[in-house]
Image 1 (cartoon, rainbow, N blue to C red):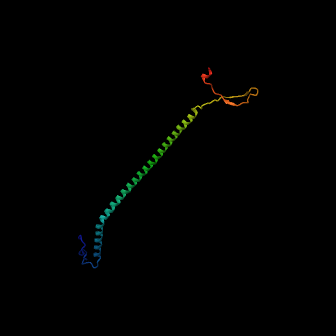
Image 2: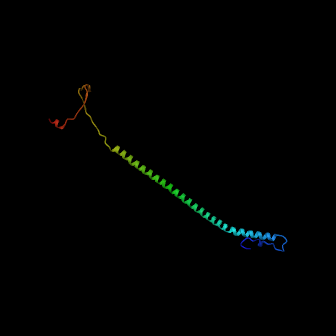
Image 3: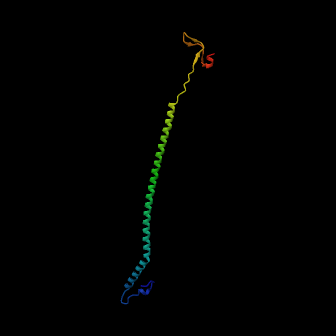
Length: 144
């Protein structure tokens, strides 16, 4: 059979009474034509199918990497949060301990004020006058 479609290829055999031989030759030519025309398409389709499988495998590996990165970020976040809470607790203990220590260490200033009565009744031991604050004499006045 030639490369181009030629009707002379399908001439009936003079001994054949019906056209079954011609129909068989037409079917074979159509089959071989379809086969030859579809061969590059089948090859391209198998190549596309192979590439799709590779892309799906790459997608699965990317998804696994993304999941591991997300897990690592989450673990890092919680690790940093634990450290932050630990630092805050230690800082609170240091500041609170310092405040409590300062409270117990500081000495209150004790002030003693002496007062005297202007008219003391010794019998009843009561003050009939008024109370006045006593002032300490300066050292130079005591000797003079």
